[in-house]
Length: 270
Image (cartoon, rainbow, N blue to C red):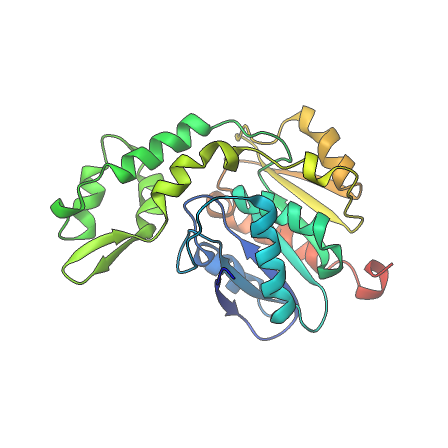
């Protein structure tokens, strides 16, 4: 069984689980989770092949969703259903989990991704190739890695996000994320297993958050989204691209607080 590393933030309020995107870690949502206290307490999950969770031999959204569901049943959701928030790749995991294990969830938030084939494979392939091509032997401190990645990845914010995956180990450095697998499985990561989920629906409230300047949520995606999630409400956050939670954190936190504290368990149990 794939073991997941998780971190809890807060001790009171409704329970909410966060699933990060490609290259991410649960801790990417730490500031969001702290901002949601005390109304909500959070579980930050490192998905397989990321952070401190186990590596796997392949990428399969159904398998990953089932692993997360089993972890929740045994722990954070043992006392009843929880809320789930997933960004990008984590949003696809969250959608699959909601469709396969609806009893585990009260409300679902999908952040800047759709239940369709995602564009951007070449962009993410370039980022993975850039990280894998970094000569770790030439890195004595994190600033060296940042300097060496400046040409292939000129965006300072993106570099900083990616370099959170770099860990010192003894005298050297290593990548925490399973770069080789993620690169080889990028076509699978871009997909959504719609055929395996045909006919499934999640009938609880769902908030679909899009970044205003991001290409990952388009008007033509609304039909498949509502086919799987008929109680979907869409929100577009102004001034945000794909990394909504880091680019517009106040708007993101406000949207989560309103949506996740709006319902009651009795209203959503039917």
